[in-house]
Structures are given as C-alpha cells and as structure tokens.
Image 1 (cartoon, rainbow, N blue to C red):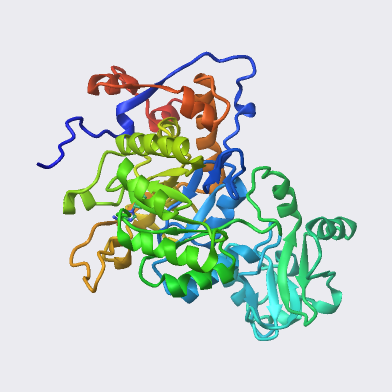
Image 2 (spheres, helix red, strand yellow):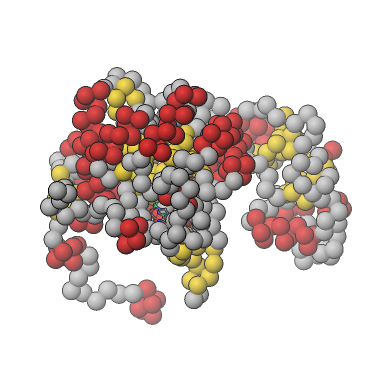
Length: 503
Ligand code: RVP
C-alpha cells in the first residue's frame, strides 16, 4: 500500500519564532551569518563558506554577471544560469572572475570617430559616464583615450563633435600596469588626484578601470566573498545532459562551485553527473545537487557525493509544478525533514553536508525561519529578480516600474533539461510562468535591510550564529486567526497620500 503521510506539509508563513533570552552581548553587530557552502568533515573547515546565507537562483531572469558581482560583494554567491550555450555561460563566469574587487572591466567602448551624440546615447544606455576610447570602438581595440563627463559641455558643444576632438588622449593619461594591486592603484589615484585609473596591458589594451569611489566602496564591503586571487566567488548551474562538455568549460572559466539545476533531483541522472565529476576531478570540483523534499532524497544525493543539497519542489513564486504534476511538499516541512536527515548523516559519517532551502521565500523573516528549521543557506529567485543588477528587463506596467521574471520551466526559458526524465523524452507542458515583479532598486540596499532584520530576530532569539539558531530556536505553529492578528488590524491604515495631504 502507498505510504500516506497524515501530517499536512506546511509553509513558512504558518510558523513564528518564540524569543529566547537576550544577553547584553547579543546585539546585531555581534551576529555572524557565516555558513558553510560545501561539505566538510568533523573538525575541519569547509573549502567554501558564505558570509551571508543567501545565494541567487539558477535562472535566466536572475543570475547574470552583474548580480553575481553585487552579491559576492555582500558575501553571498550567484549561480550563473545554465539554460544557455556553454560558451555564453562560460563567458559570463569569466566576466565575474575578471572583475577583481575594485577593478571594473569597461562596458562602454567608443571609437575616436564617434560623436558627442553617440557618447550621450551610450551613457544613457549603460548609466556609466567613463568610456574607453579604443581604435576600433570595441573591447579588443587599443586604448587611445578616455572620455568622462568632464570632457564635454552638452550645452556649449555641437552634438556632431567627434570624440577625438574632446577625449583625453592616451599620451595625457596616467595609467596603471596590468599586474598592479588595488592599493597601489589607489595610491596613484590619490597622488594624482584622479577619479579613475585605466589599467592597461603591455599592448595598450584596457584591462579595467579602478575608480576612486569604488575603492571607498570596497572598504564598505567587509563581508565580500573573494578567492585567493581577490576575485569574486561565483557559481554556475549545470544539467544532467551535457555535463561532459559544460563542466570543463565552466571550470576553465573559473567557476568556484557548480550546482545541478533540476526541479527533481532524486534520480540516477544526478548520481551519474556527480560520479563523472568525481571520476574526472576528484573532490577539487565542488558540486551541489537537488532538489529534494525528504530525507530519502537527501541520503541518496549525499551518498552520491553531492557537496550541498537543495530542498524544494513547487514552492517557487513562478513555479506551477504542484498544479501540473502533483509533486512537491510544503517548504517548511521539507526543510525540517531534510535537516533531520542531514544531522543523522553527520552523526553516522562525520560528514556535514550543507542544505539550502530553495524557493518560496516571500518575507524576510522566512529566511530566519528557514535557518531555524536547519537550512544552512537559502536560494532566492523573485527576491533578486527585483534588483537593478539582475539581467532581466526593467519595464513600465500601468505606470509602475517592474522587472520581468520568468520560471526556468516556462515556455520563455525553454530549460527543458532541468526537467530531465532520461532518454529522449521532451517536455510537452510547462512548469513555470512568465511574470513581473516590482522594481526594488539596488541589491546592496535591499540585502542590507533584509539581513538587518535577520540579525535582529536572531538577537531576539538569543542566538549569535546560524548553528546556534539551528540548535536553540523555538518555533510555533500559528493558526489562521493569529496570522490576521499579526498584521495591522482593526485600524484604518493611513496611506501616503493621506499623509501628504496633511503636510
Ligand atoms: P522564488 O525565490 O520563490 O522565486 O523561487 C525560485 C526557485 O524556483 C528557483 O531557485 C527554482 O528552484 C524554482 N524554479 C525556477 N523556475 C521554476 C519553474 O519554472 N517552475 N521553478
């Protein structure tokens, strides 16, 4: 007879944390959000850790190079989406790795024969005022000068004026050599009172800019996640079909960690993929697997050698897998069950395999709950899709700024490899939707606010670290009526227009 689990599976919104004792020492500044990203043996340190418990979803509308750099700067990791050609995914990974903290590759290249009108159009498109003037106007051309907004006056100059007439030519530029360190570059910037320093190789090609403002912001990012060459840490999604070609290309491009991206990971296809990686790279290549929703799935992937395991089926904001196929489990219950299996596995084997709660985070406190339920970190799609740095388009819908957000199982993404069932079977139905999410501005501002809430809640619970929260949190189920009690109720909330009228 089929196994029937009588307890309903539950979501994060059905729980609340009960505060514990808060001591004097228990203040948000003292909270550490450091957490393991990959498995480790008892008494050893993980080869990779996160400084904040957040990673971005392996999705076209979420994880591109700009978001990856912005998130690594805050201490988390992005997984560049795999639903693209191997070459373009590897190029995105390489772009992140080339962005040494504080060294910014130019995304604005222009030729000396272009005009002021072209400069203004490029500035409008990229939002960047500093442009590299190269012989051919392309990234691979020799640097012949730079243009910044100090070089022209829009009100006084004809828009047809050629760039070569107002750029600062190469001979007048102070430049840094390609092997310069960030602090050396910064010394030159200070000494010569520059706003930016072009870094060039021996063939006079621009490698990157170092900006005065970025050096200062570099100091504002104490949690940034860097490799031993001071490059941002970045992850990449892979699938269970073309891994023999994709994995080598991603490793060559510099990916620090991989993750098999699949809606359902308790399968021989995932075990085969991990085995191929172990046979070819041993433990040097780190690879996560998933998604699973119970202890059996966890045990299978842990035994197969996964470095971390993702939890969640059908809870994603754009996901309709539960409606379409009737598989899945409430995200809170799934996380609790997998965390139990992770702890048992650790006791038995002495190997700690981190787990990631993936999908369905709606409120910031859901992150704290996921951690309290045993997750080591969370993966978010909708959350990051709202930010300026995400690769999806900003559009205006009925006068409101929105970002496009579509599932990997949607007809738009066409990521059928994510739904691998082996053989030649092709997907004949979708498991995701195409949608909009409200634009929310920069990643840094939003992540700072979210994590401030997480730290405050942890202090309310008397916990200064994620392991302490996992061990000591007290969580209660809430009734639907007490959920109503938790919001503003029985009052008429004053809206902003009302306040504005009063002033
Ligand atoms: P959310 O953060 O709730 O937007 O969920 C993001 C997660 O949803 C992803 O990390 C992935 O696991 C899942 N996903 C992505 N595409 C689809 C789909 O089309 N069904 N689901």
